[in-house]
Length: 75
Picture (cartoon, rainbow, N blue to C red):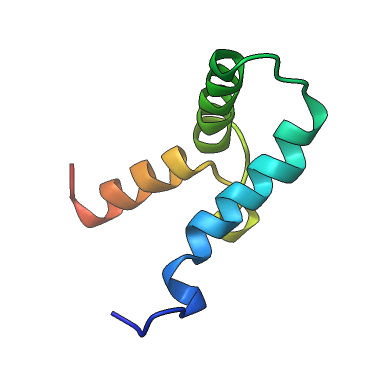
């Protein structure tokens, strides 16, 4: 584990929340917490199941994980 404040610890989470903020939530008006919660859940589904990630060879995270588990033999 790296020292306190090291950027690599939070890189994945920071990338996700940056995408959530810039690609999704800035374009939608949320009237209640419930609608915002449902919208964030929809974005998470989109992010993991539909959005292609260039760092994963233009695969979705779910497809990439499934491919890796097939190659490694993990189920």
